[in-house]
Image (cartoon, one colour):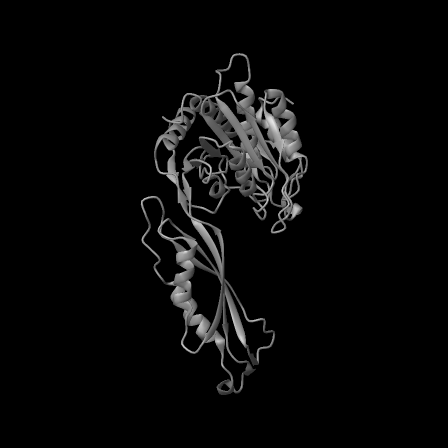
Length: 385
């Protein structure tokens, strides 16, 4: 395999069945490509019982100068119903100018582009690049306990902190490079249980039905205005995701009912303030309730500045159009990396991510490789425009 060819590298990665949290040979493959390029590789398996065990890779080539880190993941979601695929999801098939396979755009394609970029920088005719690292986890699509979060702690403990980080998530919406993520919304999941007293549906006056109480409370929560947005984020949102009585009988008033909902919030809030607001909103006179809130991520933003400008001008130089900065979508491992250094995300078009026949145009792999190569070169002279 020629490491400078992103298509060949992406094909080889797709053929590694690394369904989270299985390593599937993907990290071993990357090691075999990066060591000959002068990278010192560290395999970092973590086994915190709060999540599934996961293997990770940190590869660093230090040529002095500013340290730019590329972060990504080789774990993928399951292929789902294989009858909906026109090819083997782990075959890495090229057809009609597309590379098809699980992880093609999320995000083995971007990892392959980063590898090809550093391989091209190692060629005799290449411009000398600065300090480059690749932080690759096998736990992004899973619990996110034994992956990037643990790697960040490991890097801080050893004093190997990058000056900036680029994450290869598929941030583009319609065409490659149209969007760069410079932040992410926070996310929390809540489970609200309202208690009553069960009884026969024919004698509702002898029971205490918790359903109407819960429905009224959910209606108020769903229609509440959390904020009007900020300079970098859209308004925060609350989405109802489920209601469950655990009651199979239609003639029984349940003794309790539980609802679940998710809040995506901007930098006007944090999980603690929203939890306090939920308790205040859910308090009912003479009513009993239980509220369990689990934070997935806090909101963060990398303000427009030297790093975002460097990324935007590099993307423009390779694609002919300037990307917009965005903070929408779900969470990513950038939420952990922000503890290390300023972080932005730029990658492939994500429209087929997690779908059958997930695919990426071969031309986009080549262009993304050149974007990453140019970023590494520019960073060598300073993280700035």
